[in-house]
Image 1: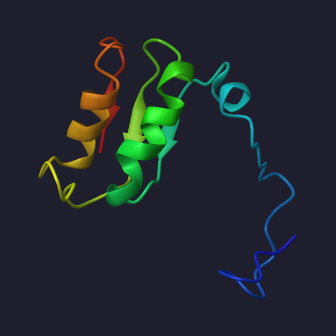
Image 2 (image 1 turned 120 degrees about the vertical axis):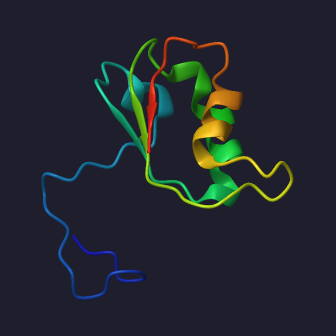
Amino acid sequence: RENKRFLPGYKLPASLLFEPDDEHIMTGADLIVSAVPCQFMRQVWNRLKDYVPEGVPIVSTAKGIENDTLLRPVQILADVLYEKRATRYAV
């Protein structure tokens, strides 16, 4: 398998799985890694928030600030996921 558009010539390992179903991919998660660019983070997490298991840590690899609010990535996560107060965040 190969991503010819972004990683031409690099073979993706068979152990790397792709899952289009948001709810299915979050079920049973022990850790969530958010590698979403800052400018899309709120949109993506608004879509995913209903499927985030309570108390599962989220690690964000994003940097920067949101243009409209000037919030940092971890602050965007906290804002979107405010109902899941037990969720832990890391950068």
